[in-house]
Length: 342
Image (tube, rainbow, N blue to C red; front, side, top):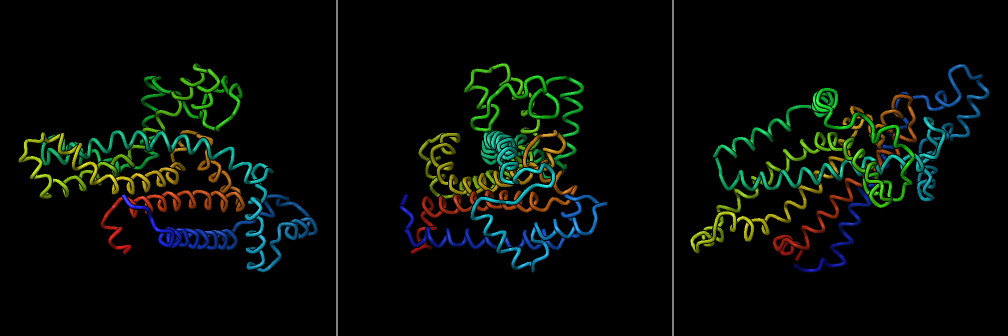
């Protein structure tokens, strides 16, 4: 392992900032040119022209788009995303309440997908063309092919309505709402910190099914890529030499192959995590999960562009940041990338 040079780190950080600025520009322009009427959503369709014009001026929509953009940038510099039409609250406040739910769901999903997908991919590669390899490939294919919303609906019908094994839609039963004081915003963590084990198990019963449904598609991707990486390494000379010295197949995987594909796995997991944060939208709608996905969907229904643009920027920034961190890790730990950097 070698430390990343300051110049190289600065170059990658500059790429991140440029990408974020481009996302900001594109998202803002799309939000302004879409055929929506945020003024009408606020004052109502029957408002008199004077009130309509006054609200339009107040929102700055009567200015040229480049002036609107600079005003929006100035607001962002002060942490102001505007006011949400849907709730009447600052968008930043709404996102601060909605994001922890999405973060908790996506984090549990990536943990599940990692602990299932990586071992499954390793074993499938080790026993290539065996029954377990064929099963792993079928599982991955199904995960890529079937829509998440279909899995969600079927899961609710079977495991909630039919078997009553999990909690229903929502983050927690109505009876328990408001009994846990938000500290981290993560209901599972906060309930444990405050000793509310009954609420913890209730919250876990609600999150487990959407987390598994959300994790399935990511697990399929992680399994397929882990299998591909492992097969590539199993044909290398160092693996053949290890096997010739009497190292067991699983010992070869654990001590030799896994360390050599760890950097690639970091990149795949970062991409999967970002994808889960983005892909949580459909899952949150199906399970009435009060996260960013449901918040943005409700905002889209009424043309609340402040909320939509802010949510898109936040999710896009997180996705870019995860890729940036994975890229930096790749440059630090992969000797081939160090040679390229030289």
